[in-house]
Image (cartoon, rainbow, N blue to C red; front, side, top):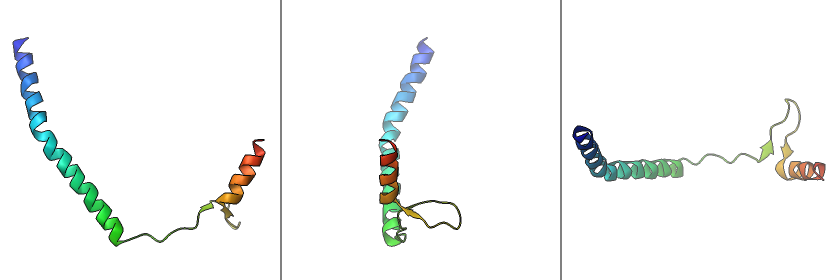
Length: 72
């Protein structure tokens, strides 16, 4: 039992010592991703609902009105 507790203490100390480094690395990756997205903004897509090929896309506001009236 003492050996298991020794391993557990070593593991806990390892986690406590490495956790700040991993959190900082994750934060840096998030910031880098945000900077890349800011440099290359994607063109805005019109907000439409996908429909069958050959049909005109339906705007979300019209679709929302149709769906909300169907539930009444």
